[in-house]
Image (cartoon, rainbow, N blue to C red; front, side):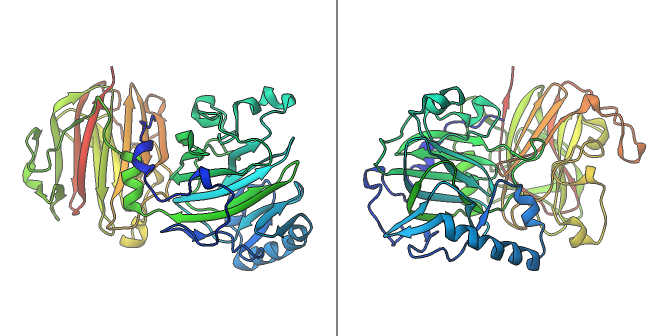
Length: 439
């Protein structure tokens, strides 16, 4: 799913200028916290190149034992030299004990010839740092510069930096990294090197990056020095603003924020209040745009009550049950539905799923009663759902042959139809709905 250029929306956040890179400061910029205390390795432990999901699954006792066992290795290869955090290029990676979700990270570093390092984000590789003059690594992309997401397979997905911005050896470089969902923005010495690319899961390409994980400083092949390590956790509201930005050219608003002009169906099932469509408790039915769409991208924000249940009708014919008579109903459901209601669901009923046909991944919702941002891309028989910056569904409905309850889905092969909201008695809210047709 393509993310439009929105670097100027987030460039105004508090940051350290590359011009001041290397100037030591233990006082973080406004809104930031120290990631390193400037004195010792308190709050850090050592990890190698391993799937962080395995660590996240450990019991508290097993995790504490693993962390303690790593400290001897850290003491051999990591040290504090004046106001610098220094790695000799060997041993385990320095890893935060705390896990982070959406964040902005600031870091200054300098390295030496033939060194190869980087920053792992939520435990996944990586924002690349290396010797850009090492001709033996030009075939790997070293000549293109540092600051890319080198472990991505897709070259157009941030693998190589958009600009070569490395400073000469002996000089300090300044990195700024923003991560929201699975999407990453990187600035090296104030030049954009990654612009909203998805960080691929190095350990399982079929799964996205988990919503939480540690920051790791890689050590690999040569000395690297760090200082001015600061981090700022990003709120859900700011995350939505950054992901969405301003709707780019080609998108048009299908809900004016005042009334349901342009919509049809049982419009008395919902009210418009404070620029939101709010479904009425106890009401069910499907409202839909009068306009029909074939291939399109829809951008929408939603908010759920505990146990809330609703859906997005895709290529809806204007009548019938959208779960079966439309191409599909994409579930809009409380991610903790079972806990909230006591009712168990099939995986094909979870949020973002093509109801009864294809299950979406779970665990990427914002908190109940907070807004979520979702992009849905429909091309031919394929559907992609990106929730809060993470791809949770990527499916081809033409390949679906098994259905929940063995119920047929006669509408799944529709090639055009209306876009709708399918309410199921719960006061789910929607806002900022825009659609772009793809020709």
